Picture: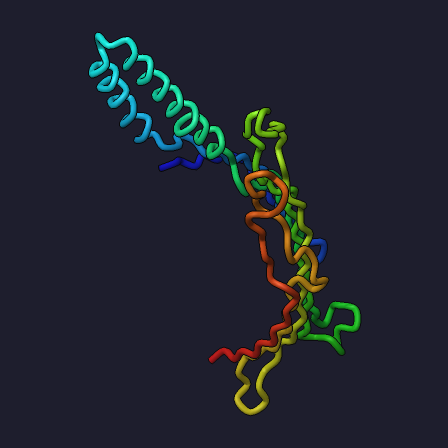
Length: 218
């Protein structure tokens, strides 16, 4: 088992330059880590180490073998794995989103022609994603370097029109939504393989998509 610990701060700003125009900005900074890796394993082996040493008491050769095996388990199976696993895999320190929405009415430019229409867009930024730290020993080619995947910048947009159905006067709307309209950052590295020569895991993001929706309120 392993625990995930995180902390951070989030800020949000909402502005209305006009009664028809809304701008929303959001920023967050977070730190995420993993801790207490295999705590039950440490507890289990602490008991076993004492038992093995007790069984080897009085036999110096056997005790030396036991100590060698204990050291190997402690270094490779416990401490070594803990160092490799207690990392904030996938942590994104910085995130920011900027959204805007504008609705047309009689007071808007071209209001008589565009009354009922609305448009908007959103830009989402994510900083470089923490992939992992090279925890291999120097003899195995380890560098101790921290690796990050590239950040992303995704843009969405929408346009729509609100109206009333002529035969029942029911409120209705039609809206076209575009996600990732620039079709950017579709694939990025998430985790390296054991010798850091290539990818072990990757992120796949939603490609550009368009969706048309029609709704009626009744």
